[in-house]
Amino acid sequence: MTFFASIFAQLTKYVSSEVVMIAAMIAVGVGTAAIIFILGYPIFCVRKKQEPEAEDLDEDPGIFGTITPALAGVIPEREKETREFNQLLRGAGFYQPGARNTIYALRLLLLIVPIFMALYLCVLEPKGATMYVSIGIFTGVALMIIPRLYVQLVQKRRYEEIRRGLADTIDMFGMCASGGMTTSESLEHVSEQLEEYPELARELRILRRQADVGGLESAVADLVSRVNIREMRQFANLLLRGSRLGNQMAGTMNEQADHLRVTRRHMAIAQANKTPTKLVFPLMFCFAPAALIMLLTPALLDVVDFLESGEDLSPSTITEAMDGTTQSEILDIGISSEN
Picture 1: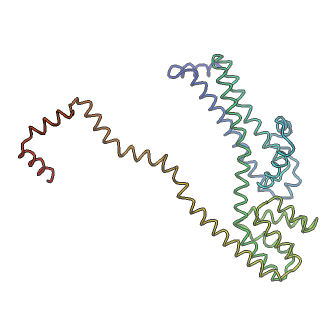
Picture 2: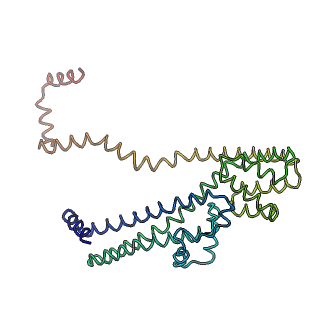
Picture 3: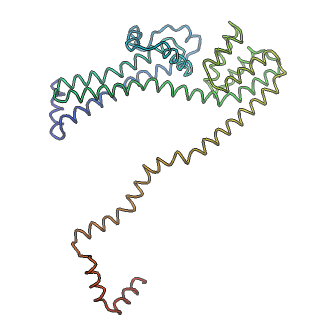
């Protein structure tokens, strides 16, 4: 306590105590978010790389052990929001049972740590209690959004990876169908070949095991619910039709793969066409001010030098100077400027 008090006393010599308190609270909030992210991110990465069988059997309650469900249940939530968030977790590939509790526990910690820090600062500096509490609540509410945004970002990247690999996947399924392989054998073979798209290979392995246990139709329906994108629904329809028609679907699968590649190319062209529009604001707020500073600074320095020199450039003074200049002097000035 004495150590922090001495640091506080030293800082207040240069800036006001309110500024020191606000900076300390912001630093604690950002540091808390960074520590929780550093602790949680490797655990999520390791769990996502586990085999699906281990994920299905894993009964770990969450990142903080047995207290994780208690922390997750502090903030109330409607049943509809819970279902939507569970679907978001499935879309992001977090299939372990403790994923939801872990995210909610991290959200609670990011909310309460800045608030407790604000209350602590209120004890040290009662004069700014209202300001500290307001900033603490605002910082906590802003930080508690981070876990959900992280899950949404993971889902977006995962869907993009699956989209990229579906064309090659359908091509390989077409070759397997033309070779007379069954659906289960095709799923196993294709999932082993998709090393460049691990998330798609993971979904195909889950699909094969679910199809072996409960039938292909229910397994495909669950796949579409996990990866709810248009391309996956098309792939699911092809898979169901291929299981009934066999090698007759080989040509249709190849055509569908080509169609997906053309669609991807059009999407890439559309994204490229949007680039100039997206660059307007960075150029306006980043490049343009720097360019204006470089162009206007010399002229502004000349103006400042002139104002400091105290010279008189009134119209009457300029007229008198021009009247006093002879024709020969004007010609000399013009010749020297040309040289």
